[in-house]
Length: 415
Image (tube, rainbow, N blue to C red):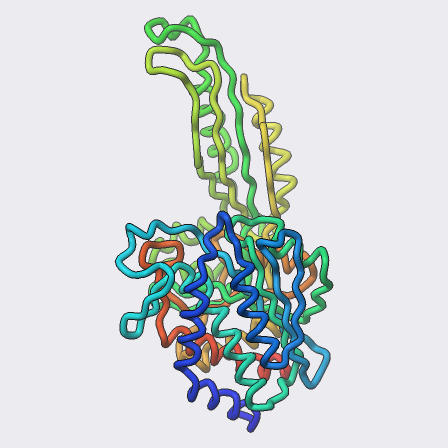
């Protein structure tokens, strides 16, 4: 440990309560999305970071949902970016035992966004404070990008930031919680996705004489089952660089899913029928029906090619059309990436536990940043309560995140 590193970590140890207070202050601002009004929280963060001497800049498409970029110059132009979102999913206050806008009970800090991810944002601010207030210049330039609209994948957040501002970072860490049932990890990959809206047409008839009609729901379900059969059982031909990521992912998820299911999650597509609607009454043959399907693919699988085959399959199904579609390609960072090494080794040193280097089962802002050419991983200590009633984080998780985020610049500089 260098002298500078020791100074920074010692500061964090001495100011743990201020970190908890900062997290509480963030939780106290309601940023449920929708509507996702993050402007008051950005005001607070901008003032805090400006007073610490960081250069701040708002990047805005929707005034109610601004983004904030803050920069702390380092000893080199090499830049490490910390990214966090300020919006949260909605909550039903009547269902909560604790105040969804923040309440501490012993080691736990309750509130919507406590683990997803205002706790991590507070830890990032604490890391910036540790450098600024000790007069320690970080070995690399630190940049903080706090965005809105992540929970609804809206355009006002990271897409606006990337469109209006050149984030020329050499690596990025997103503070999403990456631990589950006591296992810690750094997320190095995400899966691709295809979201389809299928529409079926039929011929109406009375329910007592169904043979005189064509049941649109039956047609729709048959099409879904055909998609499951043709694509859900197909094994991916993955690049060799993904093999170790798959093995780490299987080891991480197996205790919860079982090894066979965990392996299939990353070697085969998943097909989920999310919604289905149609028909007017129980005693009539439905003339129309619609369904939405969520298909997930392993990182780097050619999503557009798979989508083309699904379109051909739908075209071959009587009465079926694809009304709407959105898709993405899964991305990954190689396990020998300097960023992956720096984050995993730092986290192992801070926690004393194994850090799995695994894929996420879904995908978020990491995918967008990688497509923009910025090596990106996710890391955050927290709890399994994201989006749940009585969501909480712990004081130990907050302190651990702050220690990782403050230590990482030293490891990244030498990676």
